[in-house]
Amino acid sequence: KTRMLRMLINLLDPFMPAIAGSEVNDDPLAPISKYGRDLLEKHGDDCPIEWIPRARRYHEKLATPDVTIADLIGEIDLIKHAEGKHLANEDVMHFGLIPRSHRGIFCMNELPDLGPKIQVGLFNVLEERDVQIRGFPIQLNLDLALVFSANPEDYTNRGAIVTPLKDRIESQILTHYPKTVETALAITEQEAHVHAEQEKLVSVS
Image 1 (cartoon, rainbow, N blue to C red):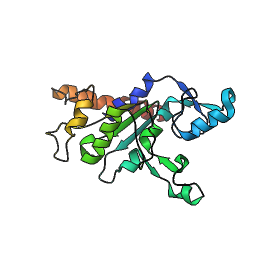
Image 2: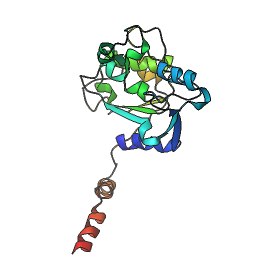
Image 3: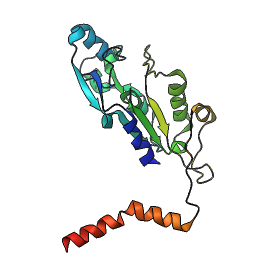
Image 4: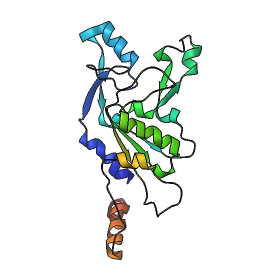
């Protein structure tokens, strides 16, 4: 499942322009962060940009009990506050993995293992297309694809996908175990790279 999801980056453009130094891959024509807006206002058409490759536009997170909204969405960065930035300033925010995946792909592996409250946070991103951090009166209009992996519900009893989130997932790719032993063996041999290893041994000898 993970391999299939990671291959999705091949559908993205090889490179994408973004405002240089932006944590959220700000679009030079429509920045969503205060950093991006300030830099664009300061430099105008001379605003520095960088080209982001495909690999840097895909992020994934394994659902574990310690995953929090702060990990995925963001939190107040007390280090920035200690450095002198005011708590009312957007610059004090630390963005989580989802805003950092802006204009890219974010994958949550083993979604049913994620706590229901955290799943509701993902639902808000899918439904409202925005995030809010610690009551800041801002909305980040994110442009990203959220993808998930999950085992069948009858495979484990570790958790379930909350209904509102499940209803908002637009498409599903269902996989299954091979129907015959022969097919399973062929897949195992293919994935194990047996022939490649044998060729290496022959070439060494």
